[in-house]
Image (cartoon, rainbow, N blue to C red):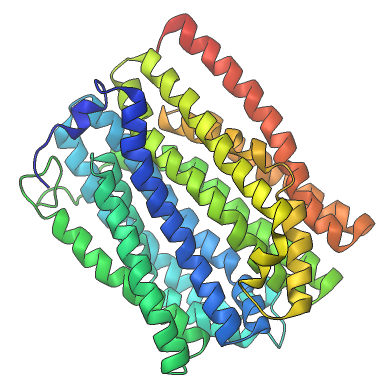
Length: 450
């Protein structure tokens, strides 16, 4: 990782070129990450069965919670790193890398131990039945054993992006997906390991790529690299990183609660197969969400660097371009689901009843998708410029203030459709709140500069 001018270019290169340079690799990486989950579901759906897909969906809250702790460290620290690089504070930047390493180790181990002890009761609470529990339990056992690796993998990838190496972060994700795609059918069909085979494929692929990431950060010629003296936890770095990362943490933690409520509502109104349908809907919806997240990851270091360098016009420009691109992405997703819902659902399963349930869910969930991209960019923008309070508020608004009450109320009136409708209704209200907050922030930026 040679000392190149990548961080400096964030404050001088044309915004459009920078956004493409940073966003395209991140979008490819996030799309690959989403395909990573989709291929898991496809292999499980066709290789293990429809009920196995329902068992997989039961584990989503635990995976969301694991992602919450990962984002608490990785997203917050990567944002802080971008700002420090913008200020040319390379000593602190190196210390941030070391602290990310240690914090991921602590959170990863603690999460695995606690969840492992109470795994079966947790899965029952999340909506597992006697039919789906064996699949959910087998899958999570393996993932928990590799949870520290998962945290490290995502944390170091965030560091790669923010230190001016978006392509290497993209390669890391693509390598993981490619290894997973090779190992999944081998373990499921070849070795007959069932759903455990899919979990093993996930962990092994991340182990291999993590070794490569550590090798990259061991290059002493890099702007930041692993070395003695950077691993001691520093109060200011930990505090600032966790403060900025609190927004995505709360968003993912709230997602854990929400998926539990969704699963419970679907089981009451549609049975185990309805949960499997949500598993399909979730994977498809997140494909487009992840693409926008990739765009946001490309925007984040640009906005963070220029905010730290006191260049408000460049901050505004990258925000505008990101919103336009995000809107196009989510509109494409909406149109695909409008015209080809059966084709999309049938990729995951040959079960006709499960396919029909998934089609209904897809049509409801994608209802306001053309506007969802704007809300996502807005939340990440506040996070990128070090405004964690507003980012947290936007994250909590959609998930807690709107979606949870809808999930508790609407199914009583409309049954399973009430569960599906809760999601687009919450999206619409969150979009309005985002518009108000962003408008006020833009006025402040124009009036006083960054």
